[in-house]
Length: 190
Image (cartoon, rainbow, N blue to C red; front, side, top):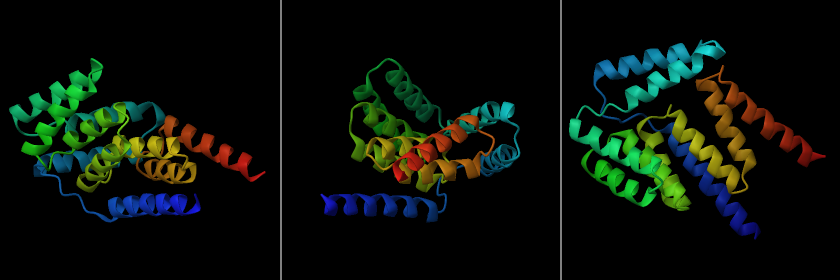
C-alpha cells in the first residue's frame, strides 16, 4: 500500500511539475493572445464582483478556434455533455483534438467527458495537455484539483487551488476551497 501511495504521489508531482514548467504552445492569433493576457491582468486586480465576468470573457476567448468547423465540433461536444451523453461528447472532442491538436478546449472538453464516464486516467491526461497548451487554464486546474481530492490527495489538491488563487486572487469560490482544505488538514493534524 505504501508503494502505491508513493507512486501515486510521484505521478501527481510529475504531472503538476510538467504542466507548470511547460510554455504555452496553443495556436492562438497574436490578437487573441494579447486579449487573453489583458484579461488575466484584469483578473489579477479584479474586485470579487468582477471575477465571474472576466472569467467568462476568458472562457469565451478560449472557445474561439479560428475555424467554423472546429467551433461546431466544440459546440456539439458541449451539447452532448449538457444532454448527459458523455460517450457522444468524447467522439466530438476526439475529432476536434485530431483536427486541431493545439486547441485547448478540445482536450478540456474531452477531459470533462472522460471524467463523467469515470475514466480518471484519460481525463487527467487531457487536463495535462490542456495545461501544457495554456498553463493559466483555470477550468483545467479546477478539474485536476477536484480529481486529486477524489483520489484522496487533499494536500495536492490544496496546492492546485493555491495556484489558481495566484491567477484569480479575488475568486470567492477558490478562497472557500482553500479554506475548507486547510481546515480539513488542521483537523487531521490534531
